[in-house]
Length: 396
Image (tube, rainbow, N blue to C red):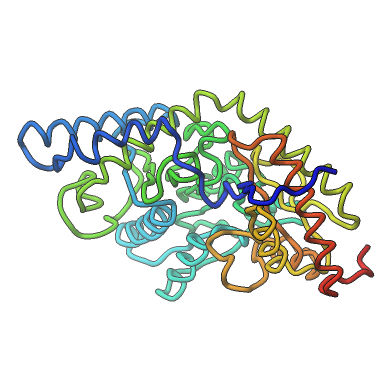
């Protein structure tokens, strides 16, 4: 077993965020200083940045099989989810003269679940479909919750904690058969697996740039032509009058560059990353007796959720950090809350398994040496917790 190298850092939390790629940084740099014009102005400098924004819009649209006028730039996936869900539900309320039903699943990202809670508090009817222990939406449960009063249904393409890929095309057909629109959170999927809005059958699709080597603070929302949506916030004429505010030109250009690069090498990267993930999985299973995988079935290439029974994942993640490995106890958006993972709870896993869950997420920058280092560090941490009496030996 290779020795843990003092001072080395291995980053295995790419589902939380990724390093800005060289391609994205190079594309952004001119628009941070040289080409700094406000895209809404009328002079040459403004027209240059406006052209860059529209070029990026067209490039991103082409990557998902959409029209350029169906792409709206946002600050992140959370904003995109909020806008799609609340914007659609409130627009359809005005059209139909009543507050309709919103259907989602029990293990969505907090951006979706908290939007659902906000709608419920505002008098809308909200329903949640069950998920199974493997990490997939129960199709029968989803179909049972969709009715003629449903205005919108929402499900994520890839789960942010266990990485399982959901049957979005089938779920969208169920929603559409009842006259509902369909929203998909593709934040953990875009740039890692193919995403085509027509093949998925979605009306709204949310993406966040920093999950595929674009900078933080930039994302986009796809809105199918003819799909109802209210403006995200009041302001100027930007984004077809639906999202006021001066555009983040550098971020938009950087996201387009990162998206093109990720999609161009997607097939090659996916094979390489999945091989490393599977190697990491097998090494952990062999090195840590009693460990098991959370989320069985088709997954995005880089996500691996492992459970070390009766080990506190927060303590383990902190100890891994001391040993030079960056991992997560679950979603980065809820890792500081100290609560059980709602994803794993929804999957019906037992408490001991949930408490010991650790998510490792790899990228195209991960190496075989990183995997070996991480497994050695994990084994050392588990032994250290055992020595401290913080691990229940009865689980082994």
